[in-house]
Amino acid sequence: MIIIALAMSIVLSVFSTVVMSYISMATPIGPWIAPTLALMSIPIFSFFRSTRNDSPQDAGLVTSAGSIGGILATGMGFSLPTLYFVDPVLFNSWMAQPFYFCAMLSGLALSAGAFGLWIANVLEHKFIVEQQLAFPVGQLVYKMIAVETHIKKTWGLFTGFVGTMVFCVMQDGIAPLFRGFIPHHITVVPALTFNVVRIPALQFDIWPMVWAIGFVTGHVIAIPLAVGACTKIFLIDPLNVLYFGSLSHVEFILAFCSGMVISGTLMSFIGAPKMLWTAVKKMLNGGVSNFNFKNAAGLSKKDLIQLGCLLVILVSFLTYIGLSVLAQIYLLVFTAMCTYEIAEQAGKMGLATLGRFATFVMVPGMLLFNLSLMHLVFIAAFVEICGGVAADVLFGRKIAQCAGIQKSKMEMYQWLGLLVSGLTVGAIFWLLINHFQLGSPELFALKAQNRQLLLSARNFNVYVLVLGFIFGFMLKKVKVNPSLVLGGILMPLNISLGLVLGGLCTLFTSDRESWYPFWSGVFASNSVWMLIRALL
Image 1 (cartoon, rainbow, N blue to C red):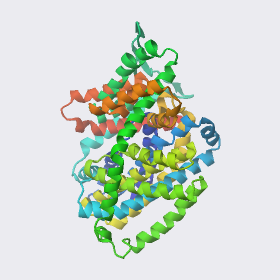
Image 2: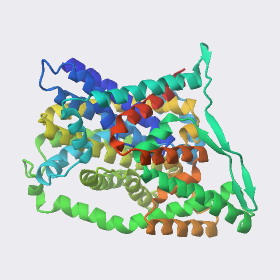
Image 3: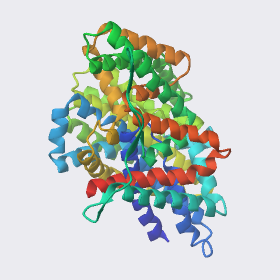
Image 4: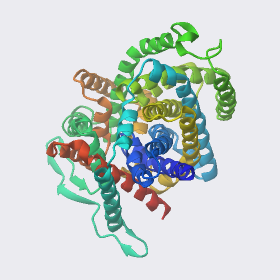
């Protein structure tokens, strides 16, 4: 049984890394993949239920190990493609050296992920035992693996996965065996022009993964994306034609969106110092006794040994990429502070706002140190990976608490998951990017493009920047997510339409959660097919 659990941990780690690598670069959403992994592991371990009573524990272990690959790939996918948009020459030179590209990404993933896992070890007792935070995703997974019957959920996942795989094969074909015969998109409405209002052709993409993400996220994503698409058609384009005719369409839209990004960044920074100071006070409040550790330094002997080994790895990697000693200290200290806050928010709400905290660390670093664009991108990715891994690890520790899993055993499986995903993420990214061009509909990399706008904002028309700033401020005031509105503005209309229609489908079911297994199978299958296409 141990061999089966370890083998499944490795397989699910690779699987979640593949799926979330693609999803994080194709869409602006990074859903937690742990529930999908739990559904996949349940049938296998249920087979042994007649002879063993700990199959829920085994399912919890492999789910927690595998899910780390998902969040690690999400943090990488949200940040790393920024380097392509700000310095394509450097990025393409890396892509021309596959081994070097994979080594750089693995070094970043393993160093940042290990730092996040270590921080989670330190925070576990405080958050889970003392404060008894909910960590909702962990509780959700435990409830899934603890229920006696999962036949309906498993069948839903299987139907979604297999059905989508068959559909993708019929759509794309398998060269040289046969050609696909299902069209990739259907034109619903042709392009129309009314004076200064230009409505592009509405094409409905037959893209199952987009519908699945839209369904799972519901109105949370549908409304802002619809607002973004309407803003582009009825506000941005007319303003460009009527008042800024000297600017090309691309120049105007990038300047406007940059203003929105700056607005969101500044508004986030208003509460950042207070938030981080609160985190520091919480960590220091009551001295080391607040953490209930064994020695006077506040850390156990095991924690100190792990920290020593980890610092050697971190310093070696950060020195290799060219960060100065002061920049390294700055990065590690502020990443630790932000990771604390990310983990606490995840424990209370089940959400991890990675991009916001990455910006907190990146922007001051840009002003304080002589950093290249590559350094800034790596800093953002480091924070997102570290914070995301810490939150995901603590979700796993919550599963361990609920299922009675030994802490040392859970930690071992999570280190295994981190190692497997860290070693494979570089190759997966290289395959996807090499096959699907960054910036294309398949790999639009919206999150990365948003960060590129922030880094390039100083080169844009000031008046258009101000207009975008005001618009972003108004969105925040009416509580519409500016980041997702940006997605509706920047993403091709056909992708936005697919996500919106998927979200609207939730209105036609009274029990949305009962469809989650089916749609989880759909987006997992479509993502795996994308990797298969890249390999073929």
